[in-house]
Every structure is written in structure tokens, then in C-alpha cells.
Image (cartoon, rainbow, N blue to C red):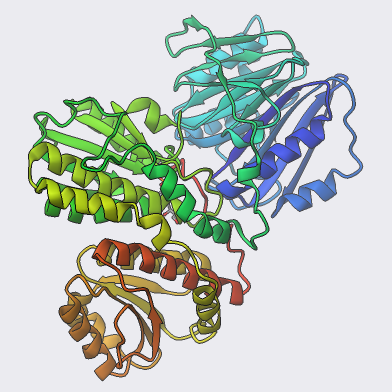
Length: 604
Ligand code: AGP
């Protein structure tokens, strides 16, 4: 999704903008650009493709002394990924960058065009800068024109605008898309879509609320809320540790993040396990009082972890649980009962569809909880309560460690509710807590396993599709395995419940149909095995993952003998992640930034 950076200061503005954009690469983009206002003159550069192209274009451009700059990575929504459509967009004497969607842009564009304004791009964003320049003609100053402009926009946005008449100022507005402001003791000012570009630059940051707008100049910041009331910035310290955001010698961030799962799960568990109970300090003692049902809502990988939760919640906590895809839920006029706890799950905490459902639930008066990896994200700020997954920065577009920590939280939560509702014997809760302590070890990647998957991957680069199959909680894992593979290999893959194959998909069975079969020894083994045998009998190529030898498999990946199906779940999760990674590497794809995808989907 688009990323924004801004800078006011005396340092090397060009480099600061390019470095900031680099930190936002993980959000996904197809073009990039910067505009710098220095000594009363604008310079702007844009390039399609990776940032290295923009870097090349700006190689002769030097910024020295005080300057104001804005930069943008664009993920196309309106108009193709071309240089003309890349941001910043120019008016007569101003530049704008924008993340989000201006829903009424067609109407505004028509009006502007009928008054003689010509447009260079096909984007919705360009209307902002022209509307601003139209308004400036009837305003006493640039800020008045900017405020008028913001009020005329419908949709979601994070906007930065600079104009020649205010050469030390950046105008900003935030509504529905993320943006924060940072500063340091040298008086430098920064804007960005997320924390990462500001680490090591700013010492403290202010997260804007929806509806905030205003301006920042060399000496001060003015923020107004949606009701035009002036408000103060609320500064928080920002972590300066960038190390964790680097690749640490791994080929890809995704690979590093798979290997990190053991330590981040330890972090997720830290302080939350007693011998006999789960402790969530972030939840009020009475948080579950009066709750008779749980509704989980999310997108993509987070949706898959929510599906896993539904098995655990009903099995252990005996609480009615339903799971919703956020983009569907928000438009289907759903029934919402006050005794339902509404849980949203999101790595980023910014996914537009999920955020919207959280707003709906709040409006309907439901108690809300977010399971999230990013503190201070929009969802965290909105929900009644938050449980942070503590996975650390996840840069690979294909989510891995976020999923692992989400499922860990849900397993803990099912035991937490089970204790409150008295649905599991204390001895069983204690047994499962000791199993939870084994998860960090169960997700450790052995060299032997990685080597085996690397070798095996060369046999799975063709064919007419993959089916990942599993039963019970292994069905969401099958869905997640298939999503991982299709995201980064661009091969067709589906996740399916093993028992459902005979109701249609088995018609596809032939040697070119690859079945990745999840066969946990401790959960419905015999049933799952017969489903795989049905496929094997029809000549499908079977790659079985299990701790039990399976002679009908063409390829067999052995996981270790575990005490419980949940430990098998975590071991198999690592196997499907690495298998996808190795297939993608062999196909020569960009593992961390797969085509057409964005890390944080902040438009619907
Ligand atoms: C996962 O690999 C994805 N790229 C994607 O499905 C992601 O999980 C989804 O967009 C939801 O994101 P969130 O967890 O940040 O809300």
C-alpha cells in the first residue's frame, strides 16, 4: 500500500526521503517519487518500479541546507503504475502526496476541468492539489485554503502538501490512513506512514487521529481535530533499535521471519503463563462477563488464524464462535448482539476492511478486542482492549511470524476463557500450559529439515495446481499453506478440508495435481489418511507431512513425534512456510515483495 514520508530540516533532504521510502518498501509499491522545495524552487523526481530507479534518477540532484521535502511510494488504485500517475502530484506551485482513496474525486475533477484546470494523471490524488490551488484564490492564506480543501474530500486519506508561498511548511491531514509526525532535538521534523522510517531519526512521535489536520513549519506544529478545535501533539518516545528490522544474513525477510518464530513466540508467552493459568494483564478481570458468543473478523492470514481460534474456543472454552471475512462482513448488514465479543485480528492494525468492521461493532455497542502486532495502530487505538502479539516488525509481505503468534495467543485465550467458564479441568489447563511452553522449540528450523525442503521444492514447480488438505484446525493451516504458496510462487493453490475433496475437487486428481496432506498423528489421523488414500488411488501426487510413516505418499516430510496435535500444528506450519519459500526462490520470484501485493492494505 502507498507509503508517505516528509521532512523539514537542514540535513540531506533527498537522502532522508529516499531512506524513509526504503523503510516503507515492505508495504508494497509500483512507483515512487519525491518533491523538494529549497531556496524558493521545487525539484521533483518520479520513477516506476523499484526505488533504485528513483535513486538513479536523482543521482545528480543535491540537497544542501534547509529544505522541505515530501516522498511517496505508490500502489496503484486509480490509473496504471506510470510515471505520470506516480506521486507527488503537481499543481501550479504546489505538490501533494496521498495514501488512501478520494471517493468523490470524479465529481471534483469534473468541476475543476470545467473551470479550465488540466490534469496530467489518471489518479484521484491530483484533484487535491488543484482543489487547493483553486481555494487559495479565495482564501487569506494557504492554511485556510488547505482546510477548505480537506473538508471537500470524501474517502480515506493521509495527505502531505507543500506550496511555494509557504516555503518552510508542510500541510497535513489524516483520515482513515495511517500517518505520524516525529521530531528530534536538532529541530528536524518528519512525517511517515509508519514508525520504521522515523527510527534513528526522530526521538519522539505523535500519532495523528482520524480527522486531524494542520501544518508544521520550521519552528512549530499546529494540529486541529475534525471539529476544527486546536489540539496539542501527544509525544511518545520511539524505539531507536533498527537492527531487528534488517535481514541479519538471511536471503529474504520472510526467511528471517520464519527462523525468528521461536524467539517471538517466547516473547508472546512471556509473563502470560503461570503453572495453572493464563495471565492477560491487558484484560480486565470482568472482560468476558456477560459474553455468550465470540465473533472473529479479519482478512487473509489473520482470517486463517481466526479460523484456528474457532476450533480452540469451541473445543476448550465451550463458547459459540463464528468467523467472518472482514470485506464481506462490512456490507452484509450483519446481526450483532450485545452479548457478543467482537475480536478483530490484524498484523498491521491498519487493514481498511477489518478496521471498518471494528467501527461497526463499536457502533452497535459490542465489546471489542483487537489481537494486533502494531502498538498504537488504528485498531489498537479504537478497540476496548488489545492483546499485542509481540512478533516484532514483519517486513515480508507474506505473513509468517505474525500468524504463529496470533495462533499462540488464541490457544492461550481458549484456556483463559476455559478457566473463567470452568469448562476444562485445572489439570488439563496445566497440561496444555506445559505444552505451550514447548511451542518455541517446536518451531525451530533444523538445517536437515530446511535442506530436505530445498531439495524437494524442485519437484513442485509445475503441474496444474496444489491442494493443501487438512481436517479440523489443520484445515485453516491448509488454507494458510495454500495462501503462502500462491502469494510468493504465483502457482495456483487451494486449501481444502480433507473430507470435502470427494465432493468435487477429486475430479481434478491426476499426477500433475499436487496434494500437500497434513496428517497429524493426534487428531483424526485415520480419517485424514483415508481421504489422502482416495486421492492417491486416483494418481494424484501426494506430499504427506506427518510424524507417522505413510507409504502411499510420493514424498514424505517427517515432523517429530509430538505429545499433542497443537505441537504438530506448529511444526507443520513451519514446513509449509519453508516449502513455499523454497519453491518461490527456485522460480526466481521476489519473495519479500511479491507482485501485485501490499503489506498493509489500507484501501478497501
Ligand atoms: C498474508 O501473507 C497477507 N499478505 C495478507 O493476507 C494479510 O494477512 C492481510 O492483508 C491482513 O493483514 P493484517 O493482518 O495486517 O490485517
